[in-house]
Image (cartoon, rainbow, N blue to C red; front, side, top):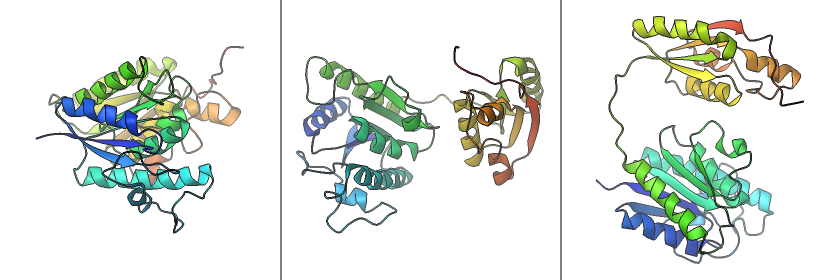
Amino acid sequence: MSRTIALIGALDTKGAEYEFVRSIIAANGLDTILIDIGTREPPSVVPDISREQVLAHASDSVPSNGVTDLDRGAALRLMSQGAAALASSLYADRKIDGVFAMGGTGGTSVATAAMRALPLGVSKVMVSTAAGADVSGYVGTSDIVMVPSIVDVAGINSVSRGVFARAAGAICGMVTQDIPKGEDRPLVVASMFGNTTVAVSRAQEILDAAGYEVLVFHCTGQGGRVMESLVESGAISGVLDLTTTELADELVGGVFSAGPSRLTAAARAGVPTLVAPGCLDMVNFWAP
């Protein structure tokens, strides 16, 4: 059965680039659904899903004439809402197996909003001019692969040809790669930092012997956010939160804060939890 990749892009400015990528994916034997998220001029290639269809999925009201007359920020916000809801619907209906996009900061913000709406494990590749800098705002707690575009996504040239083709090859390989079967056991998440490694490792041994699979998260801010998101997803049977250092960073401005909602997902989800103040006496900063 052929796999299908959703291509999300502003086809008013990047039609040729997406036609190039679509040809690479087709040569690998995969299907595509081309989705237009342009906000200004008409698309230069015919999409499979129009921008109007994308905007129809936005949670906020959209002007009768679309987003053409809105300022850029408002237009991108509505398009992000629509793209996220559309991607989620397409995946739920088993119409797509992965998502690929290319763009600058605006296109990246819309496309990654759609990618973040999909579950962990769904292949997601974003070729972006913003990759290489701090992309945490785009990636969030998702598993998006960010590929630096090196040059702007503005035409097929001696540099972009290789970047786009290899990125397209990457998404093809990701969606066609079969995942080896493993032993499915109830999942427990655990938080760990350097000073709690021995304790968490010993606890992991005990839980493994009791028939649980333990997912350990490093408390670097991102680790805590991802752990909380997994607990909220309903896939977790228990939480072993032995390392709460991210709360100390949140309190006094450290660089490893996981945000003010850290330590709340388990309570909201009703998941059994054991909490200890591991590394709560530590705060992390960059170099002096």
